[in-house]
Structure formats: C-alpha cells, structure tokens
Image 1: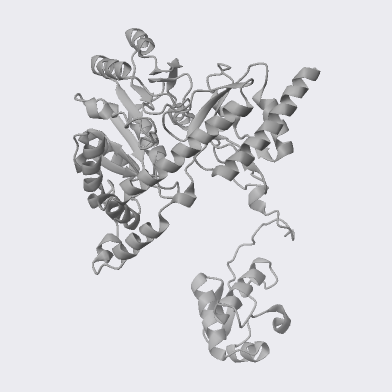
Image 2: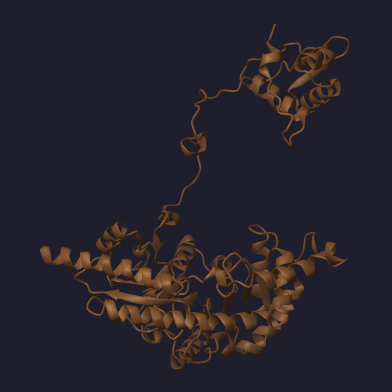
Length: 497
C-alpha cells in the first residue's frame, strides 16, 4: 500500500486551497513515478480520513486531476492513474538553487553575438558613472498618482481597458500633436503620431521600415550604441562621418551621397549622443537640402530636447521639414522618469501607418491608462512645471560637476561644458587608459561602466560620457572624491613604469 498519510503535507494557513495543494502533490508523485500508471487511488472517504480533510476536498482534488488528464475515472471501479501517461525523462533532481534554466537548455535556439552586452553588477556601497540619467527622486509621483486615480475612477473608464488602437491612445496623440506644434514648431496632427514605448522602439521600428540587407545608413563617428545595434540587426552598412563641435559634418555626408545610394541619416541633432554637441543651423539646412536632393530619410532622435541651460531649445529639424524627409523621435522617459515608457514617432501619415502595422507583432498596444494619465499631465501644464523645476536642479548640478572636474583633473582630462543635456563628454589624456582606470576604480568602490561602447568605430578618441543629473551635491562630491583617488593611483602607476 502506498503511504498516503505520510506523503502529503497540507498547509492550512496557506492562501492556496487545500484541494489544489493536494492536486499538485499528486501530480508531483505521478511525475516522479512514485505513483505508477494504472494505480488505483483510494476512495474519497478513505483518503479524507487518512489526511484529516473534508471529503469534498478530496472529491475536488480528483476532479482537478481528471480535468488535467492525470487520472481517469472508470465507472463502478474507481479512480486510476492515467495508463497512457508517458514516462517523463528528466535528470536527477539536485537540491540546489542552481536551477536548470541557468545551466542547460534542452533545445536549440539562435543567438546573436552583436546583442551581447554584459552590464556591470553594481555592488553595495559602489557608485557608478552613468551616461546621463535623470534623478528619479525628482519624479512628480504625487501629481501623477492623483492624475492616475482620477482617470481610473471615471465611470466610463472600462471603455479604455480593452484592445485599443495600434497607434496609441487617441487623446494622447491629439494632445501630444498640439503640444509639439506649440513648443517645437511642428505642423502635425494625430495622424502623424504613433505612441511608442520610448525612443528605443522608435529607432527599432524606423530601422525595420527603412533598412534591408546592404542598405547604407550614415551615422556619426561617435554614435548612440543602441542605434548602431538596431541598424546592424537589419544587416545595413554603417557609413560613419566626423562629428566635431558643430555636430555631424554634412560636407562628408554630401560626398558619400555623390558616390553611393543612401537610405537614411541618423542624427541626435540637439545634444549629440554621446558627445553632447549641437548640430549647427547651417548644417541643419544643409542636411535637409541633401535629404530632399538624394531622397533619404533623416531619423532625428531628440531624446532630451527639454534640457537647455544657456538658451532656449533649438527647434528640431522636423519643424523645418517641408518635403517629408524627417522621422522625428522623442520620449518623456528622460524628462520624467525612465519607468514611464511613453515615446513617439512623428512622420508622414503613410510611414506612421506602416509603423503601426509592424508594432502589432511586438507590442499590440501601449498602456492606455498610463497614456491617458500623461495626456492629462501634459494638457494640465504639469509637465511644463516639472521641466522648469528640474531644469534649475540639473543646471546647478552641471555647474558643480564641471567645477569639480576643473579643480581636480585639469592635467588629465579635457571637456567642454555642455549647453544642455545630462552628461559631459570627458576625454582622457592618451597616455592613460580607461581600462586601467576602470580596474583601479574598483579599489575605491567606483564603477566606470561600459567605457568601451563609446568607441564603436575604434577611432581611439579615449573619451567617455559621464552623467551628472542623478547625483545631489553631497553624492557628487563623494563621486569625484573616489574618482580623484582613482586617478592619483593611475598617474602614480604610469610614473612608476
């Protein structure tokens, strides 16, 4: 006889119903072949007495096992383990946290080495150089929570909770179009807008629609790594041009266009990623004229338009585009907090329609409630008030960060004080190596991060992008103190060689 009384452990304090606990333990015993196929199970009264549970619990358990196919009921004979269950071939169970999923895979799948990226694990008490992240402590969570509650408490909110538009919430698209027309000089309506999960999705969809194998796309010698990866995923050719203090060198773009067919140019026109420089007015006009002449698309990634400290924001290329060449990407992720995945693509209607068709298969629709909350957040003026507030904070942090860099690192680094954005482009004297700096920094609980990704073109510029917005004054002083100690060791090591 099978020892039913000692083989089952039921927790009466658990939130899981007793009959499900019993069912799951039966399944485990069957899978482990401790209860073999064709084994007759005890009657419901007998098992209920053995386990000290109500008979209805056992009946419900047997019904669950029957529905799942683990047992079969034979009239006038009883309940039996399903005779047709195949034997489950599995490795011997190892009582360790090292689960199979981290060790072995029982099937083949395709891997893409170009996507591999080992992000550093930030240990406790470590500080890290980021490449320009907003301070989430400044997020207007109370304002957003009130807005969200108000949206969710509306009587007809249920209408927004089913499948919606592939383009994103219509109210948000209308409000966003009006907002961008007012603040960025665009001339668009809702039909030119598709809501995305941030600018990353915008780049992905744009690359999907524009590029096929061996198509040519022009990017900067230094460029946003994720954009490069997206274009390479499409098996496109990346043609790189110089980036100087005035942004992409458009004369080089023209020379390429005279020799090759170009599908697109990717540009972060406002604060070039990663160098933070702004594309000059002269080059903006030149680039638009080239796009018209050679019929290529301009992917304008305006990821942090709102953050300018010395002047008003320069209007995007999209506001001067009269020929339908510009695909304008942006998001509120940087402005408010990365967790709020709301971005947008602004483009001619036919392009937006096809982007929506493509989006269907990676993200059927966005978060309608979140989109409604942000529609209200923008329309009420709360977004503009938040921007004005954090602008003052980030400007003060930029000034302090640059002051500390000048005070402590004048002999080893060069940089230009950025006019906007949330990061500084820092160039290390070429007699020193970021690889050595990164290793020594660990001694002082400082993580430099993925410094290699700032030079995809292997040009040897020896620069990295360091964000300042995330740290308050005391944190920034501590960050620079650790960095200063690191660089002292680096300099001393170089002298001793």
